[in-house]
Image 1 (tube, rainbow, N blue to C red):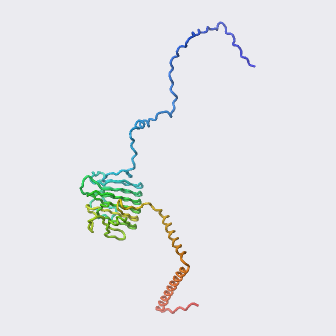
Image 2: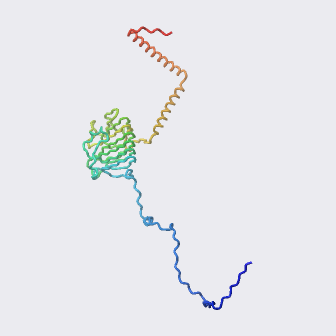
Length: 343
């Protein structure tokens, strides 16, 4: 068992007097102590990058602008160049030839997208709008405009090698003519012109086909056509012979190598541009056509099929006998003895 031992007595020479006890009463006020800050936490630190945003939260924040190749609002332009390889191009533009020209366009020269149309461009001034996409699609809404009624003509070039092209020329201001040149190699081209278009359309294709939508076909007049090109007049009061380089009329030059060309009137004609299924869809269509032909043959009555087979047999026998007779006659004429019949 463990017992608590009493403290040993203190010698007299080492004893010290105890300090006097403080008088009883209210304790004196303790000196003021400094407040310590709370421990540091990195998550509680203010974000200086968001401070400016928080201070300007009341101001309207600018929206992020879209790509310059895909404009949302309508713009008034002159001497615009858009060129891309894989991106798509879309936008709505007003062609105003009265706007000042840029010095960057001084080195550009006008050239025909189709060399067959080179004779229609006499001057070498650059086009007022040039849009080119190598693999991407192009979708444009165009109109002509200006501050005065002075006569002018805007030249627009739109081309793509493998992408689809959709051009809607929906409005032409009075005395503001247009020369629209569109070219593609191997894809669909859809072009709409307004009702006040007054001029000629020259359409050329190598292995593609051309389709006129109903309203355009009703208002247009075909001048001449061949297997590869066509010349169409659109508008009132046009002579049979039209010079496409004349700046007082409108002109439209459409060319394609393997693609399909669709022409219509803006706001009236409509064409469904939903892409097809490609090779698999064509194979499916051919399979369905073959199945329908086989089904039609199987559903015919048996006597009818027998009659067709007998008729085909008689035709083949007659052809064989005719060939044999001509062969024997030719051999006899050359002096060969007749061949003995087979046993």
